[in-house]
Structures are given as C-alpha cells and as structure tokens.
Image (cartoon, rainbow, N blue to C red; front, side, top):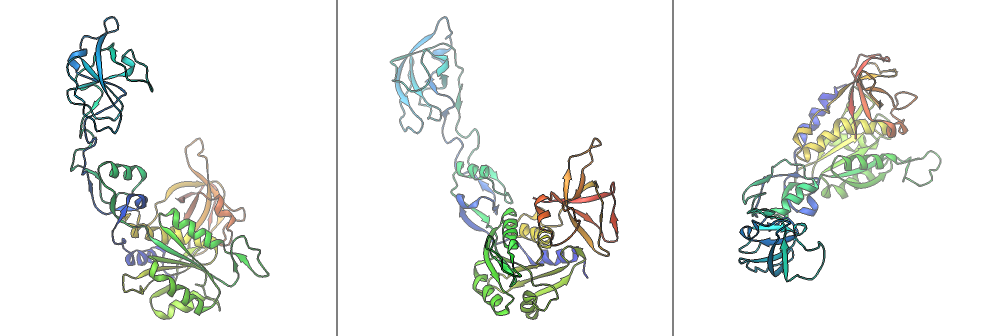
Length: 419
C-alpha cells in the first residue's frame, strides 16, 4: 500500500490550472481571475449628485436658515441619465436627482428635505426656498473620487464573486480573462445501477453516486457533465469515454477499481499504462485509480479519477484527492493541497481499522462549557463505506492516523470540515 500523501502528490503533480479564456461577465462568476483588472473609466465618471434636491451655488445659500430662507429661481430639471447641461447662474437652482450630473456653475446640492418642496414626484416649481446652508462640495460626488482611471480594482487570483463582477463592470469591463470553470465528466459503472427514482429490479440499486459526485463537483466550483452509467462492459466504457473526452477537462468514475471479476474500469484503463491503480492506506477508499488520458484533439491530457463504488468511499476520496486537484485546475493554488484539520474531542467512541488512516464521518456537537468541539460518528453503526445515509448527517470527517486501534470518549482527534 501507499500513503495518502503519496497518492495526493501524484495527483497534484499531474494537474495544472486551465489555460485562461476571456469570458463575458455573466459567465465569469466562480472563475479565477487570470490578470489584474484596472479601471478604464473613472468611478464616478462625472461629478454627480448624492441626493435628490437642488443644485445650487454655495455662495447663494451661505446665509440660509429656517427663519430666513433663501429663495432661488428654478431653471431646469435634471433626472439621472440626462445629458442636459443647464447652467446655474447667481440666484438660480436646478432640481436634480441622485446620480444626475452636477450642472455647470453649481458647486453644492441642497437635499429636498432642506427646502420648502416635498420629496417625490411633482411638477417643477418656479422657485425653491432653501432653509439651510450648503457648503461648497456638499452632497456632490466628484469624478474619480472612488476609483481613478488606471487604478487596479481586482488582482489576478481573485475567486470572482458577484460583487467583484459588479466592480469590473463599473470601471468599464464587459469581459474578463479567467481560468474557466473545470468541466468534469461524471460516470458511474455497474450493471446493478438504475437511474434515481426508477424502481430497482432484483439485484439492482439506485445510482446515488452520480448524484453525489455531480453535486460535489458543483460545490467545488466546477461544472458537472453527466455521462450516465455503463454496465460492466469494457467496450461500453471505452465508447463512452471516447465520445466525451473532447469536451471535458477531467473525468470521475465510480466503481470498477477493486479486484473483482467485473471491475471494468481497471480492466479497460490499466493495460493502457495511462492510469495507475493503487491500494492506499486509508479507510474508506483503499482502492484508487488516477491517470491522464490523451485528449482526442492533441491538447493537454484529461485527468481521470477512478474512485471506489461505495458512496462513503466516493465522498471521502473526493474530499481527500479530487477537491484539491480541482482547486489547482481552477488556479486556486492556496487550496490545492492537503485539506486542513481542526482539533476536536470524541464525544463517543469507535473502532479503527488496523494499518490504515481512518476518515470517519462525524457530527459536530455544540461546544461544551470548556469551548472544546465535540464530535460523534454520524452513523449509529460506526464506520462502513456503504453507509450512505450517514453522509447526510455528517459535518466533518474525523481523521485518525494508522496505528490507532480505537477512539475512546474524550480522546483528542483531528477533523476535516466538509461542505
């Protein structure tokens, strides 16, 4: 057997960030930025009003107060988006809405609440009484005060969120150079599988792995491409892979990697020499396969992760090996390595397999009075790679090193939090 670290090192050495592509903003969310983004526009692009009110000359209203308001003649109306440029001359004002450009001659905005006019829709008044003074620059947002042209607003390596895309749009960008979303083919194997929701026949089970893996892929920020399921038929597997590799960046298979007579994945891929199959010193997830398949168009190869068939094994294998690899392919370099663990205390005990690191699905209880995080097995029956129902309750995986025969209540453990 090899160690978990040896298999993970082999995986990470074989994958790299996808080549950058320019995508429209609407398609870039969740991708990783491949270059710095600098402003091509000032933000705001022109002096504009921060309030609904009246654009005035500050000198005209310097003496205004409630007892002695200043009356100004209203010469124009400026809604947001207007291209009009009515001048503000001594003794005049322009009604202005939030975001509208400040007209020439004006150097302040008086909020409507500081006048004799009512807020909201209404006919343009002939005059307005200003009841409070407004200093020069009051309620005026100056051009470029938020972002000047040329200022870098986003750095390469940013994991793009909605607010990042909004920032890019505000400074003049309609597309960004990003590492695109990883397209991951999800393929189940086994003659016993039927689609979810279909009534299983004798000896059949629902294909829960397809749902599990596709969901994990999406949670990892990649795009899941369902490839369905194939029977234990070598030619069917070859055909399914050959027909789909050209549109994929990676493939995940489940099942067919052990030592059974019908382990089709191992039968098809091992002789090609492109995929290696190992026994990894972990429980669950001991049988693992990984390699890089030739791309049909001569481009970079397509990594393929060949996971065991039991759902808990699939889940653990994904979290330990596949998620870090997908993060590297997405260019999230800081997350492309061994998953971090946190200290915890076992609230209940369980037994451990000899000679293998254990990844036990656990529930995280509320911290006790001492502040310690306590965990207990998610399944009442303990550890088992087939106990898929326990995954829904699990908050974390307790990581117990090889050589530990049993975890007793009160023992210190390390936990890997899972989404």
